[in-house]
Image (cartoon, rainbow, N blue to C red; front, side, top):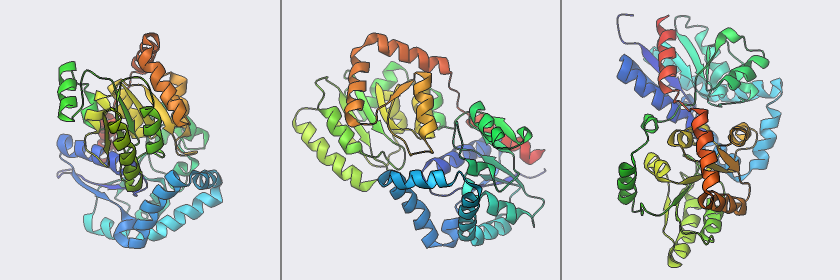
Length: 380
C-alpha cells in the first residue's frame, strides 16, 4: 500500500474500556506506523436516543441494578437472544456505519464491541475490499455474543479467552492471544523519588500509606460506603476515591470525605480524572471494580487488587482470576474491604506473598503486539 492505511475503530459507549482501548491502539498505529485513524460510535452518530440508551442505560443497569444486568447476561447465553440484541443495536448503528464507511473509506475496520459485529458483517458484504478485525475486550471468558454474527479475525487478551472462544466453535485459525491493553504510561513503574513527587503534586503525604478506591470511567458501585468503612479503620492511612462519571456517587463520597477529614483522616475524592497513573502507582493497595482496564493497570503497577464489585456475569471471570492467581481478594462488603486492607498493611508476610504472586504473573501490556497484528492484517 503506497499511502498510509486508514483504520476505523468502532465502539459503543457501554463503559469506558472500549473507547479507551481504541484510543490506545490507535495512538500506536498513528505514531509507529503512520496510519490515519478514526474512532467512531455509529449509534450516537445516527441517533441521540441510541446514544442515551447505550451510554446511560448501560451505566444505570450495570452499576445501579446489577440484578437486571445479571438476568440480561444469562439471557444472552442463548443464540436467539444474542441475535435479537445484535439486530437492535445494528438497526440503531446502520445509518452512522454506512455513512462513515462511504465517507472515510477505511482499509481496516477494528471492532471493539460485540453488539456491532453482525451489522458490520452486513455492511461489508457490499464493500469487499475493506478488511476487518475484532479486539475482544473481555480478557478471560468472553461472553458468547463475541462469537456470533461474523467471521472476522479475533485478537484476544489471553490464552484463556482463546480457549473459551474455541470451545464456542470459533475456528482456531481466527483466534490469537495477546494481553490486556492499558495506557502506555503503565509500562513503566515510577522510581521511589518519582512516586513521592507525584504524591506531593496530588496533595498526598508520601510517608503515609495510601488506599485507592477506583472503578474506571464509570466509577464503582458503593464507593461512598467503602470510603466510610475504610475511614473507620484505626490504621493510619490516606484515602482516595475515584468515582468516574457517576456524579451522584461522587457527591455522596464527598460528604463522607468531609466527615473523615474532620476526624483527622486525609481523604480525596475525584470524578473522572486523567491522574489514574499517578494515583495507582502511588497507592499501597487498590480497592477496585473488576474491569479489565483497572485490572491491567493495577497489575502493571505491581499493586494488590481488592475487588469490591464486579458487573455480574461479564466481570465475574476477572474477579475469579484475581483470586486464583493470588494477586488480590474478593471483598463483597465494605467490611470485607476494610479487613483485607488492614491485614495487607499490617502483615509483612502477606505483602511479600502478594508481591511475589504479582511478579509471577509477569503482566505485559498487549498494546504494541495487538497494534502490530492489526497492521499485519491490513497489509497482508
